[in-house]
Amino acid sequence: MLSAKSLFQEILDNDESFRLFCSIAASGEAQGGWENARIAALVPQSERALAPKITRHGADEDKHGRTFNALLNKRGLRPVPVPPETDYTMLLERHGIGLAHEKLRAEAPLTVQDLVVYLAHSRVTEQRAAEQMTMLRTYFGDHPDIGRAVKMISSDEDNHLAYCHEELLRLARAGHGPAIQRALRECALAEIRIYRDVSLAVMAHMGRILGWSRTRSALLAAGIHAVYGYERAAGWRRRVSLRMPERRNALGGPAPTAPEFA
Image: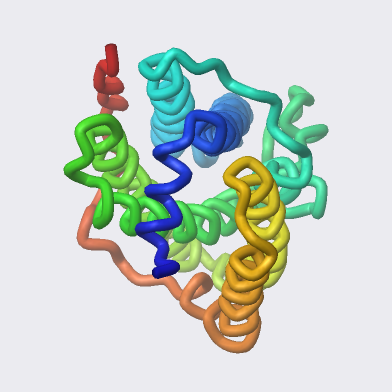
């Protein structure tokens, strides 16, 4: 039977597919860590109180990247180069979603509008990350090899999403509501398209590694297109809504250390 659990179990059980999965994940998390660190360094003076939370966000992403690499190391595996068509983070940046890396490499302070763009981008992408990790936690939270890592990352992603909601609502009360809604809608519509394309690319690579039949590959591709169709028609709206989270000040403290996987 074809299910999300059986699919991830198959990827987990094979060294080469697991190596690709962890390499893609580690690369994306490391990129997110760099972006957040640069944003924290460039926060405008009027928003300096936000800098420690952005720093914490980046530290969490770096921790996740190290965790995926540690999972590889535990199995005696090394990371592999990430195929460009599977690089979700870089594809978002290349399509103008979030803050351009050219701006982050400069030394000029960001503006409040830049922070709106950053937080809107984070709110949309962290929703995706939180949903994916919730699914993995449901299926593999008790797994002897990856269970602790999955639960730790899932909790962090929930914190990141809560932080984005809270800070965007604060900026909306300060008069940035229309700009926030425009940024959220633009990012959400682009993200669902890029997520579809990346999902198709990842599944194509996994299919070659695992020797999937044409029928199975076609069924998985059809499922990815069906999810995109739903998200394009209506599902994107839940990625642009804002509500005060139960977890308040979720990134208000130091980042916890990653668990050991020796």
